[in-house]
Image 1 (cartoon, one colour):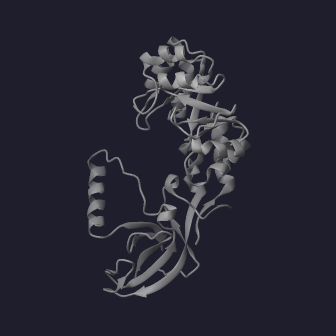
Image 2 (cartoon, helix red, strand yellow):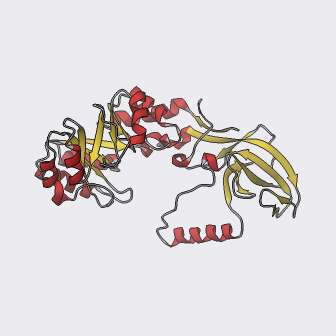
Length: 342
């Protein structure tokens, strides 16, 4: 099997270096599937461009990060007393967002923490009115900063600035302010408004996937079969609608092919597209991520675990077994057989 991610290494690393040099205090986010590259590879890249801290998603990701990266490792998921895989290490920075958790973690004096505010995301963190109680419960914990995780859509400079003001008004002994999801322009404006704060952006997608032209996913053609209209094929023995070829291509559900997150349909056009896709799927038609002879082709049936069956109509150029075809995927949900640095 060969469902691979090919990376134009010079171009990709040029983007990483450019963004890192332009972003003071950058904290690279290295979590989940490592944005398709793998977390260890990204940790090594972060070291190469001089990051002193990386952020991971969960405690399960901490041991690998400590091994692959020499600096500090911040955990974005808040510490909870019932979490069984917590790593208490001098290089680990924990996130706290509840008074009860701060009081419990205070039993481990010297543990490093960032205090998180509950933004309009309404996900984790302290309400502004709880900050005083949080400060009182900190005891001998080492506070490395204050953090806010902002929504993705719209401008949120105003909300970030309000949290900076809340930090100023609190008795939290830190001037380090970690932020997620501010644009470069917003970061500059926030620093101008709050020059006494050290603003540290935590960035994942726009860092690792900020130049998609440097990346190309390829699936290997494993088999090619001529098929005629009405012929039954596949696990589910569906009938082929027209003459053409059936391509068996490396890349299936184990790679993330055919799996997608729910889409936020905002606006009439987006809702119309969702309805159209739903209608096609109800009729048994779903577009694959594979492009063959210049067009994105249809699945013959839902993808298998490690390969997909794709229909190529008569008249199109037929690839040979062993050729590769391009695939458009969501990198954060994809697993590749290999990441090839070209």
